[in-house]
Figure 1 (cartoon, helix red, strand yellow):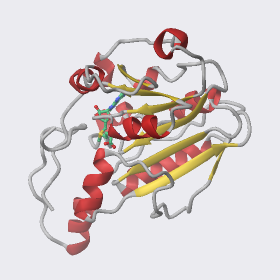
Figure 2 (cartoon, helix red, strand yellow):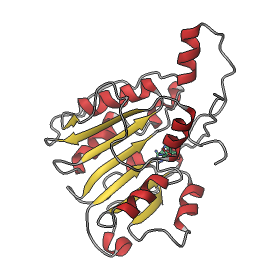
Figure 3 (spheres, helix red, strand yellow):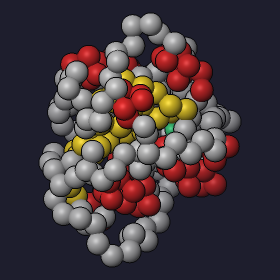
Figure 4 (cartoon, helix red, strand yellow):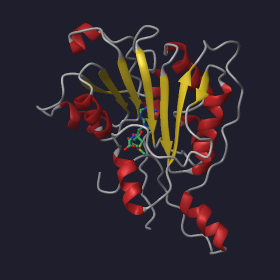
Length: 245
Ligand SMILES: C[S@@+](CC[C@H](N)C(=O)[O-])C[C@H]1O[C@@H](n2cnc3c(N)ncnc32)[C@H](O)[C@@H]1O
């Protein structure tokens, strides 16, 4: 398997503050929402929007060209919108109880220590999600990087408001029929995918857990280290893009 190229994108350079969306203006109604953090090329939400006309869908993505490409398509479902924004600071898009599910699929691992703070799943973003989800609301997340998936699982579990609905080993079939671009590519390559689905069972209480962001390594590096093979070149970039995107 070739090394995947991840391109740099600094979320801190994107200063858009969306606040609460005017859902009447955007969707022509004020119904329940699903929100995807780091929607990439947007196929997952696109398919979900077609399958669920009763819900509205918002994709947040820091790479403007991906958002533009989706937003200018004439066949975009009326219940789907994408915004260029740093998701970490834009999760309160609707009043309490209206966002029924957050999605975080294959978030950038931000391998370098100085970039850990860019990760989209951190105790502070988990709390931002649990503050707006209703009881019964969910967070569905996936990663191909085992150590990152374990960190995400730990952060969700530590918030106190969520319980896991899938197995703790995370190597489980997808709980929804739609799949993301990265998910499809990993499946084609036979690479591991770690999935988690958490449900809100109580309101979050007390301070946000103070948990360290941990060092994570690529799956290929884990495999290589286990086999004792020498290390290859470290790619300069890390971030988010699929080859050919
Ligand atoms: C590895 S890609 C996964 C894309 C898509 N979720 C999928 O599974 O196909 C991660 C995406 O998250 C975006 N991203 C990274 N940090 C972000 C942030 N703070 N806010 C919004 N999008 C972000 C990247 O630009 C990239 O498109």
